[in-house]
Image (cartoon, rainbow, N blue to C red; front, side, top):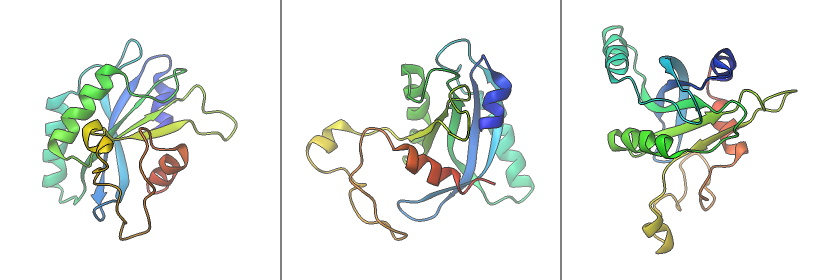
Length: 164
């Protein structure tokens, strides 16, 4: 992701994350694929659905067991957050699988061993306010702290530790 992001500077880049949903709370990313597009500002253009469909068909034909677990994109020099366009993109991924993850990396601010990266999922504010957020239970592989609006950088680094 970082390498792809740096290659695209000053433009934004986007890609898909493949892996598996290990249990109800754990996402393992095993591979990332760059998507053939870039942005012109603080948000990438819409997902290339033809490319995504062709890639998924190729994965099936080759017998790869991975599935799309989310997407990533870069914010070169902007930090890690989701723009309005990014939120719409994440909504489309969560419509396919509510556990899909969006990862944002800043290749400009990632220097001298400091990786600037964050992972996001959309939160239903109504259920959060009512104390009914479903992620406030225990994982089979550890524990989950009460979620905040953004996943901490430490959590994002943990997520990335599973990437080859």
